[in-house]
Amino acid sequence: MLSVQNQVVFITGASSGIGSACARIFASAGAKLILAARRWERLQNLAAALHKDFATDVYLLQLDVRDRQAVESAISNLPPSWSDIDILINNAGKSRGLDKLHQGQFQDWEEMIDTNLKGLLYLTRYIVPKMVSRNRGHVVNIGSIAGHYTYPSGNVYCATKAAVKAISEGLKQDLLGTPIRVTSVDPGMVETEFSLVRFHGDTQRASQVYQGLTPLTPDDVADVVFFCVTRPAHVNINQVILMPVDQASPTLIHRRHSN
Ligand code: NDP
Ligand code: 8X3
Image (cartoon, rainbow, N blue to C red):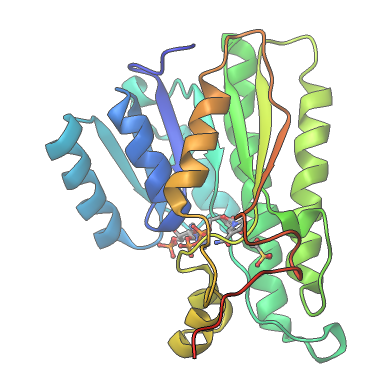
């Protein structure tokens, strides 16, 4: 097993859900963390908790991954002790809306494409060159089962996650001949703020998504990410699909109804 002690791990979308859980598991193993998201207070609270629990060295970035210039500036202005990034976890992402394509909201489409696809590309483009020149690194993209199965009204979200799958495969091919590893971790239902964001803050509709089943937790996904990163250096886990036992596809879900 590879140690992540003192490795610099850059996590996007660290202010919530899967990103926060990744921060915690890597912190517990002694990594140094660059945590990025838009909600500054959330990041500060997380950094304080990680410092208290694990004495973690944390560098915070208030960053909107959709803003290419901001991403470039954030990466190129990292202090020297933080600029050698060993592991990039491209986690920031979202679904917006659940509408038939011909009734979809343009703003929702822009947000999903700009965050899930273009944001992930920007981070990758600005961070991977130094991994190549340093001859070390691991990129973990958080995809989704939505990239493997399109579901009704999932259209654009599914398209962004299918694109993440293609980008992970392409990056692996383009880095062949280097020691840099590329992994896509593709979960099914995970209870986070994901559905709240999808339904524009409608808490009742969001909670119904997980009713009657046991969803994955953010820690379940973070465990898998950590497993992939800590394999021996010659092992590349290309892709992991994980779902709750109560789920077999985006539309095949077993719910226990109490009456
Ligand atoms: P959450 O909504 O809990 O977390 C999403 C994170 O992304 C937040 O930290 C948010 O931070 C960040 N984020 C969103 N937009 C931006 C932006 N423009 N710039 C920077 N950060 C941004 O959801 P999850 O933890 O569930 O989602 C994490 C990833 O997992 C996403 O890529 C999602 O598609 C994927 N996924 C989720 C599944 C699920 O069922 N929950 C299943 C499969 C995949 P902030 O708002 O502070 O910027
Ligand atoms: C999140 C899982 O099935 O809601 O990517 O799209 S799903």
